Image 1: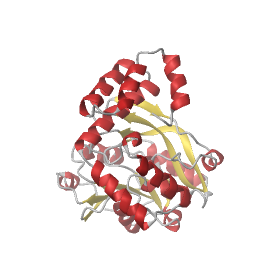
Image 2: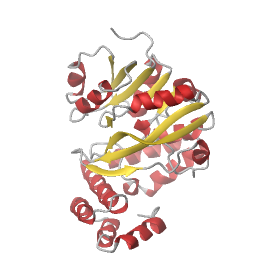
Image 3: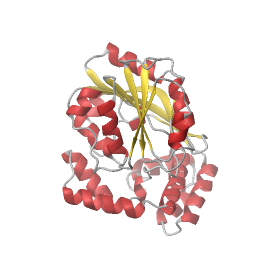
Image 4: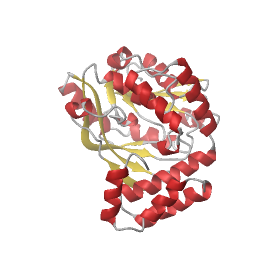
Length: 320
């Protein structure tokens, strides 16, 4: 039977992820920590997402359907319906490692002054091929507090948090599409201690269907709105309208696929030095969108020695 008061709610928004969600659900059900509910918010999917979720017979799975309103709205509905005081965020195209919930639960249980715990992660491509391991730029509470505002302190699908503090911070801003987590963390880290464990606890999947794309493929105005709103902790009505228009214009396969291959190319060059794989992906990005000069620059850079590439990465990280 479904536990009346599970210790953790695993909150998973889902939109047209039939290709990936079976693996994601199975990775949650295989956790060594078993006292949880898996709350899936189906955000108006038009593929077989709902059918796949209903094919599972585990009583710990709960499904809520809503019309398509976006991930932030789905997460807010999820938090209002979560039965547990601790909420583990997880995306429907990612994969939890078996110890993820146990490790994070034990940390928060042993450290009641902490309100959010994240972790490092392995990144994989849409075919589950390993791309690189991401070590967070900040792990301790002091390091997180000192991060520049433009650096997101957590991997969204890697966090376990105390629900009361996230609600106290106002929940997810539905206007901040594509950075709803970043603006929430900027407010939440003021309410209690937070940290990232120096341990890989999940695999984050990069895929061209995701709403999140390489931000260098976003417009300059998008980046301005994001930076200003995170600094303030809110968006103006005009910024929300502008942001919606930008995202609507960029929500097309050409930009998403080009951005996906561009990001893979950069990660294979910067984070996991495999220049041949970098070139394969960068050439795909160029074929899809031949007008982006940065793709040609990074492709040319892939032929230089590793030490020189690393130096360029450190010097020019924010511009390419």
